[in-house]
View 1 (cartoon, rainbow, N blue to C red):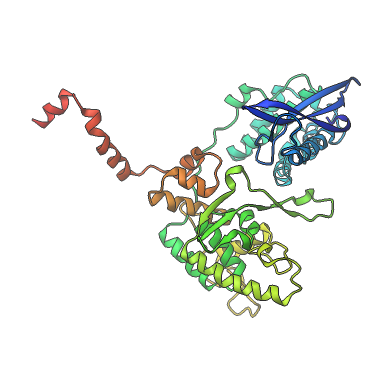
View 2: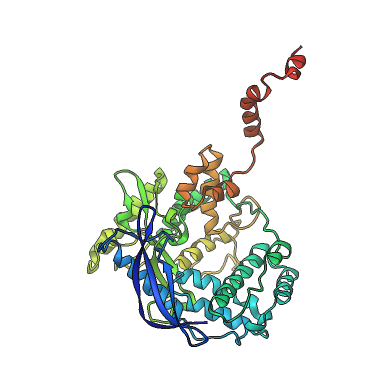
Length: 440
């Protein structure tokens, strides 16, 4: 795959919902050497149409040019053909799509590449449905989780769709029949949330924690439902002390091994989805932690060169304006959650956070050790259990769809179902003779 694209593409407008939207156009040479024209409706980082006005209006043209450049870069990609092995083809396809997808997403896809090793000896052009079915069965037999198998299949499906589009293969071997019959059904994951006693215990441990980034970061997840990247991406200008609200506006992503341009492994980006840009009220404990930490941070900032406005500094970051990384935050929490360790009590080395001898690990509802993301699960679970409506919880969590919140967190409650039936019964029973006979 990979096009020979002429120039940098061009922009055009098309009618869209009573207005206009930006369209990108490129000229490229396909496998047969024939030059063709390809057009695409341009979208922003959240997948929304980049709209404009008619005539000579340049409204949102900057965003359109950025989206066009990303699309052209993904179309050029690396030069690879259907004669390459499936595993190599898929990996190069993911690399070529950088710009069209975020670096964090690309890194996540590449993490699945070890699962494609069984297909390394098969050329992309020779891949058949029977090969895909055998590959899926091998993953299932190896005990891979249903969600893992389905994700790997979808990555291959997407690569094959693009291979068909550019003529590297004639049809997609990842058929709907395989999707329906061979892919394992994902089990409904029950969040490994903390119960009330677990929340009290964690709050006590956080109060005693010596590392302020651990204390504040964990509270942002537990008390406000922020993701790790969102905790690290929060700046002091996003902490509204007048209205006691956090404005979630950006996140810190992780390129991993994709960072080969000297820009580092982490970078600031928009939240996971459009819904991820949200406002979250603060609890009293979280507000108190932030107020205390803000004063400490301001003192450190004033002792430095103050090259960056304090309001633009990251809450969990440093006085020079650099951010704390999601990986480091996750490791701090993992140590606290682990509890006991292998060192003897006589060991004189500094123990650090979470290494106190003999303390039991922090576990959740299903008995597993609580991860940093489980703190976010706890936030949502507590909200739903307290009677908050699912739509509001979904907005606080930054979910793109309230159905996700409902499916994951709204567990059946016997008392609640009885109350619901008692309220509906008079309407449902109206006019029935059976009710009057039973009353007699």
